[in-house]
Image (cartoon, rainbow, N blue to C red; front, side):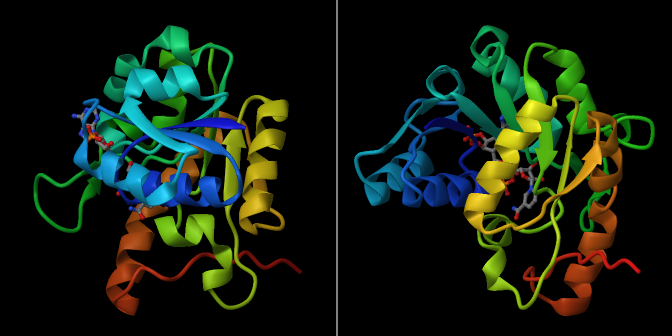
Length: 217
Ligand SMILES: NC(=O)c1ccc[n+]([C@@H]2O[C@H](COP(=O)([O-])OP(=O)(O)OC[C@H]3O[C@@H](n4cnc5c(N)ncnc54)[C@H](OP(=O)(O)O)[C@@H]3O)[C@@H](O)[C@H]2O)c1
């Protein structure tokens, strides 16, 4: 499959690399066509890897990933162009955080409690099928759940069931056996507001290699 990854940070690189390993063609997008991190990633990942602007990646991908800084994701998606997102599945991984008062960051008020980044992206781009996932764990675990011992969980939120089924297939190919479908895109609120807990756990374990596990009766 042709996949467009919007974002050149840890998350973009982790998914782009994993998708290449799985045999997909991947274009990594950035604000600029000559982004150094994207160009290094292409050099290391062979002929199925390419890079360009957010627009180039959005045009290229049959499925798209939003791996941009959450507080600027809507800007990044506007740069990609609504016409290039139309009708496609957008796997949305962002957390909108405010680092202006140092660490730990807080949630950006316009993206929490009564809304979320996932919902705001869906509202801003009604023709794209937004599926929120993976934002509750670190980039390396997102694409390789086997890094941690035992079973642990990942969540899905989105209004379009066919889109969620496609995203589940990708997550299954990464090794996630049973992603938990929380419901519509409105449920992004909950997973985005797990971030303060994640940050506190990071302080407790002094590294990012942990995840949530849901147990039932
Ligand atoms: N790091 C993790 O393990 C982790 C885990 C879960 C969720 N997340 C979330 O996943 C997203 C990506 O995280 P990350 O750590 O990989 O990278 P990041 O540093 O949060 O984001 C990097 C990307 O954001 C773009 N960007 C930055 N400022 C922008 C602006 N003003 N306008 C448009 N685009 C802008 C950058 O564009 P250029 O390419 O042009 O520089 C780059 O592609 C974030 O929302 C983060 O909260 C991260």
